Image 1 (cartoon, rainbow, N blue to C red):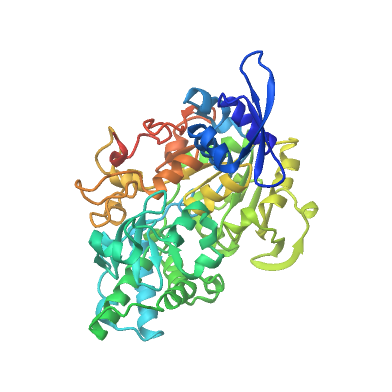
Image 2: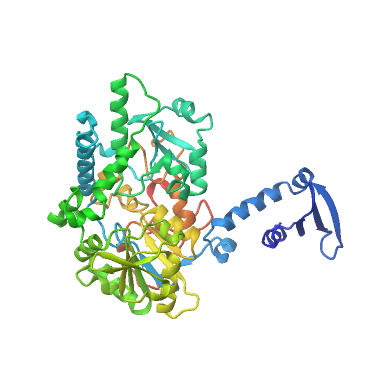
Length: 513
């Protein structure tokens, strides 16, 4: 056992130092208590587990927490902690659905229209269901598509499948068990909940896809309607489907970065022709807050959008001088791999990528493409003139912007969840989001809990659990943050299951009690 583990054992009161011995034995150096003598004892593996019992299980739990916890020592010891933007030296932001907000309803309608048209005209699917208006109640972020079975899943934090549909048809609990076993668990979703990046570019990416934001939220409905059509045409559940590659092609057709300049695909043309229908201008208070922040902190923007589209949307939302709000801008950052990989930064001439760059070549007040967190952090260290700066990143995509930087880098994170405003919050019960009908679902229930009806147990959803574990705080929009000065103190998330701290301005209604 490592020295790190041994120190945890000591804190648990075992007062023991464990180390590995040759063969099927372990050596345990036990203490007889305060002032007692140390004596070595040889124990077989099973005997050792019996001796430690509950203590060992608690140790294993703590080891897991040490692997992924973002909680400070003060929070672990006292159950409370605070968060301030002013505690950080380098503060970064995502652009889309973070600093830039969309008129989500209009955007979802556009996305569905473009994708359904592509699937009918370019992939030959029946228009019977696809060209019907989108069923808004079926839409929700965070749903998972099981490609081969034609199912759509809603998970709890441990991978348990709490709700599911085949196509768009809701499954009874017995049906879920027939597919995934009596415990309603699938090894694929269990592995996914243990490491969410395995479904990004790893082997699980060929089995499942998570709908993570408002750019791909229509994918579940389109997938489900195609499955309904195929089953109807076959007069039975086919049992094995190969629909997802066509859905992916529709997404690529809509969002390919070359299409913004070329004027093809349907999506970018609509935004350029009528930006006020799809984009929201950032509030003057938020822009002022960002300007004030940059006076004393190093600020950066990391967006997945290519530079031409980012410039278009940021200019509309933040103003034509938006680049002055940041010391460094990174476009076409391939998150979440940006935070874990080593792709080089690429120099830009206008919107055209030219040559790869070393970390030492990066400079302040520039805009780059692609890149990686390690090289960016070195640049931020130079710009901030701090040997070990504290990093913070703010974003809405819970895997790309919250889970990955919090788990795999030294950055802390702030989560944006517009569903807070759409569903209502404690002491703020009335829906404050103009596009609430697109963000609420009676079919799936709250984004923050696993059930969809009062009869179902309403435990926190996979995503509510992820927010609590990996974010410092969660807000419905950056406007909530801009209400306060940079040194405003927030109570941040804690390990306590009963503690509601961390959500601002208040806890989502479905998580109350």
